[in-house]
Length: 396
Image 1 (cartoon, one colour):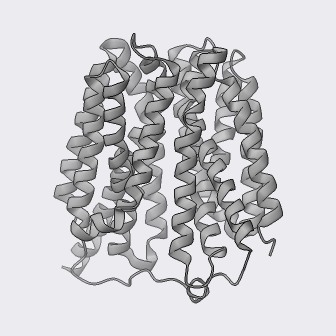
Image 2 (image 1 turned 90 degrees about the horizontal axis):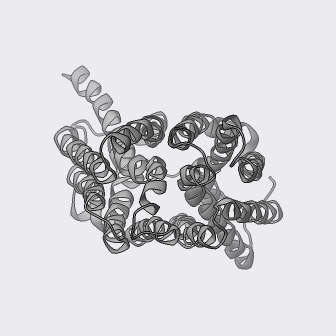
């Protein structure tokens, strides 16, 4: 019986993978493929298109403050299933929409599912089952969001070209709800044999031993705000950036898919690089890659397809700085006894950047007729982030 129980851990890892696939991948990683079609609706504009993306980030941000109470009231199985249903419901609301009000409602519902049922639900589930040995399984699970970006764009494009935008949203929403029901059936909150629970290392309990002034701390929080705007928003507008510059629908969708492959690979590499180089030099390396990607992507629209694929892939590899970086920074810069507060501050700043900066792309496109100006602003944001990081972050 012990062997059977141990084998069920692999089912739990699969569940964690599916959690990230539907609750992070569908509303975020692969969602950009819809953007050109949403703004092309009769009652929609580029600004409205940016607004609904920002509202998802806002709903996610607000929901963050309720995650602990949510999973305290509901167990992991019910909590994840309900949150996944919310993500699916958001897509179904989109399927009946032809105006910004209904799209906004669907985006808010989707953002709640993203926050409550995404990384938080995945982390809680794997911690219950693997304790201190969850790292490999977290890596497998987080790749679920990347796989969504790899496989869904082509499928969505087929439904869009064969049927309609509303039908595509409806099918994806029903698929997510079906996966939510499957998760409800498969998830077990905890194994019958208790596992070693995750605990902070002695260094983390005492904080990192690194201290920065309060002013420097809040300047660094601002830098993470900028990073959130670059990483969250920049990826969501790949498809419409190239489609408005004359690229075909297939190229616009493939840009999302290829960049998701790059993100999947970079997630596996980032942790290794940080372990080898340390948080300071590892972060500078990925920030430099992000800067190069942002510069290249400003020149890619209207050029060759190869440049479109290459620039978006370089950009998204640089975005993987947020995968490991924010977690490492929050541990190494935590004042004694305030690690949870630091984690909260950094995550709220990151998500707030996605919300507020997410209002810019559509506004700039309305004025200039192109999204290139927005990516030029992202170049400046990355330069400011990198400068703050080099000046403030301890080098040892």
